Image 1 (cartoon, rainbow, N blue to C red):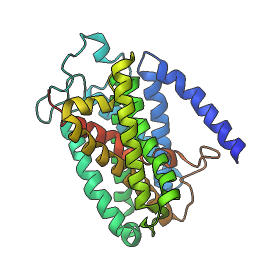
Image 2: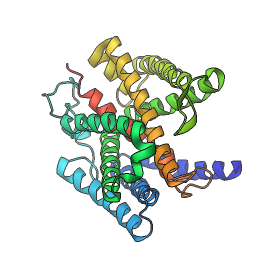
Image 3: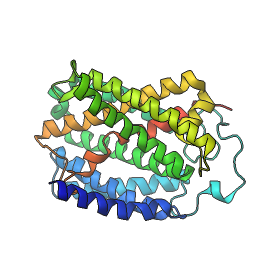
Image 4: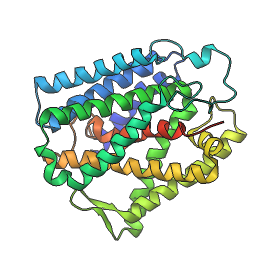
Length: 309
């Protein structure tokens, strides 16, 4: 199992690194479009729609991503507009509901994503263990379509800001997960959601938030003293919201990463599955790897929309 995990991880890194390093936007967009389509296929299978319907779901996710990117003018198949024009000296200036300067997607889309994840996530975690399968299959698949398309659009939008910014969002999720794992093992007493994920504890959640806070402090210092291609999420939040606002934003995003993890665990438990699929040998499926990123990617941009120059 360990050998399989290592081989899969090495193959993924070998594919992902050239796409991240490429100056053109399309290699990263195309690769992540493939992954998010696979996640759509997995979502459909977990929600009682396997076979041709799952393939159709994957195709619908890909089509929805490409269509929305074209409508919003995302720099998917060309060089990002931010690189073609004069550098933006005031990256937080924007009108209410409009894109931040240097961004493509209107802020109201990310604000809708907040409502969808916060209200829908709370309802799913409270009632999902008894009512998830009573929701019509079509509505469950449409929900998956919306969540996956929003996540991919947010991913492409984040990549267009620069590699440092994108990695800072990824590392927020990873730090919260790692901190929660070790904090839960060391201090875990009170179960967070025993009917969904018995191993998670409230102490693990707090530990994850502490880990994110430590990461943010380090990253801001690196931004100030190293040559980076773009400000990180943490530096932008510090500049736009101040120290207290940044802390509150990071607590919110850390909490939502847990919601994403629990939501996918709920769906798998309802389906009687241990993993979303076996597409990634040793690692389970794509959804297993991106569950916490699904809410954090769009909601990090929603938080960014609160920043003003």
